[in-house]
Image (cartoon, rainbow, N blue to C red):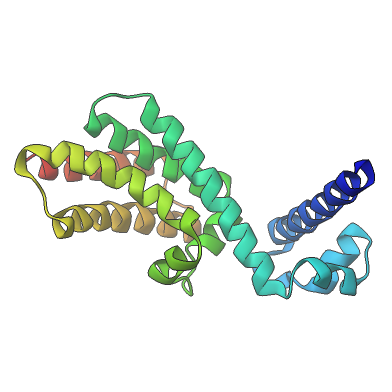
Length: 199
């Protein structure tokens, strides 16, 4: 029994090492540089061993995406739990989202890349839906006196997401705007959307 546990532990360690190596390559060389051979070289295994754990590079990207959503959800939950008022929760969660995007830039890129279809992703990966569920809970709470419809909540969520994701995208491409200005724009946008929700 002990040897079976040891084998399972070693397999999980190898799987983790593959994912860590993939992310390290991306951080050093960018997404276009990632290949199964490079990952194998980085962990000093042969390429066929990597294929025993992941069918292809897309499977590795999918697992990195899943891990990214788990981290993002953890950060947003922690931010939400620091506040009781839904407007403060919304602000804290979107600021946590912002921080994650730049602290884990490569994960954010794979999670929300141009090719990512959020609806399809949520169907195959429940973790992808968790951050939006956290935000929607606070939006519903804030809109509770008006008994919002699902469409109204969805509209407010996408208003937030469009603004925050847009600012992140601009700042990933152009870093010539000061952090002070960027943070002011971010907070102004979030508070403006919250004011529109409160009516």
